[in-house]
Image (cartoon, rainbow, N blue to C red; front, side, top):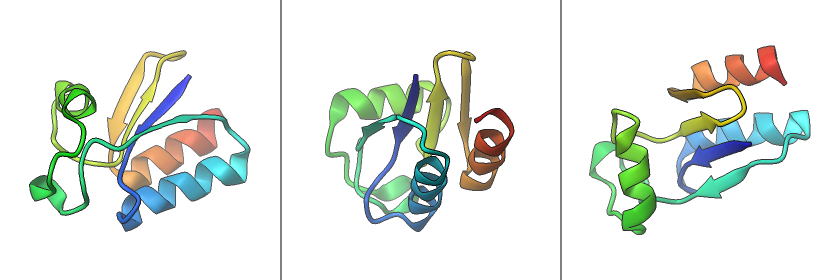
Length: 85
């Protein structure tokens, strides 16, 4: 299963969502905070805790549970999705 920690107003997150849609891949969205880099207001404490447990307070953040892969950075995520999906 793919999980995307993101925010609707973030252009980097939009890039990842577009790639997922282009590939026709199902995924779960989590909205832990508003956009604003590391300073966006937290809107969901539980998913924000999951986000920072990955090592950064940064979106987008992709979790691929099937491959046990986690990553930040939209370009890296898009490249990963192209390679594996």
